[in-house]
Image 1 (tube, rainbow, N blue to C red):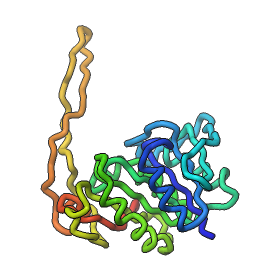
Image 2: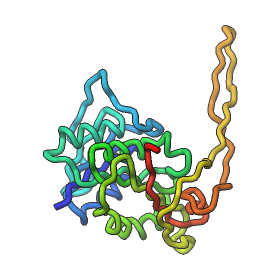
Image 3: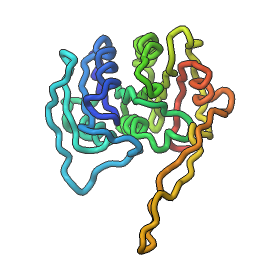
Image 4: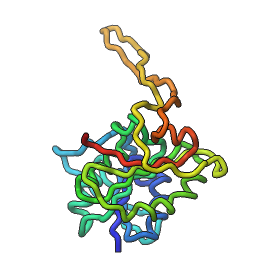
Amino acid sequence: MRRIMITNDDGIEADGIIRLAEAAKEFGEVWVIAPLHQRSAESHRITLRKPIEIKEHDFPIKGVKAFSCSGTPADCVRVGALSVMPEKPDVVLSGINYGYNVASDIQYSATAGAAFEASFQGCLAIALSEHASETHEITDRYLKELLAEYIDAKPERNKIININFPGGKLEECKGIKRNLGTSADSFYHDRYKMIEEKEDGTRLYMVDGIYNEDAEPDTDFRAVVEKYVSVGTVNNIK
């Protein structure tokens, strides 16, 4: 039986990880090892100089072994694969993230960071993300189909399979686009806005991104903008 580890960066009680665990049960033995709290934009950061706390968690999906972790999503994969699970997982699923992980944003993504850690550990690594909304019709329609298609893919060091589901109603979705490249652009062109200047000269800045949908053709970014499910392989080392 396949050993499946699931993690995320939205926290162990997030809706996306619960839906993913429910779907993954059909494909093997599921272990959830995920951060106790939100850990977005942590990239591939790991904990080295303090203990990582692992605790059994009351997870709402029957038959799933679940543990919360005090560390980052990458920590969850490392401690899970090397110590918590009796054997390394065959596949690690990271997600379902609340918000896309496409284009240049992938470099900051802890969803992708956890998946890359899984690939470094020799596991098949699949990152899954969806539009940040409460409508999941497209994800629910295609999730199991794509798991079935990719869950026995050959693991590749430093590479992950990256799946993104567009938002909206099911009838708006145009299908699946596979083997897509990663856009060099981003949904937000970031800038910083000064929100306060203190008497001692200290300045406080907040990110103030400009929304953008002008993505290159045949990329993950363009696919989700045009209401396709995007599937591609991301290489962490050029």
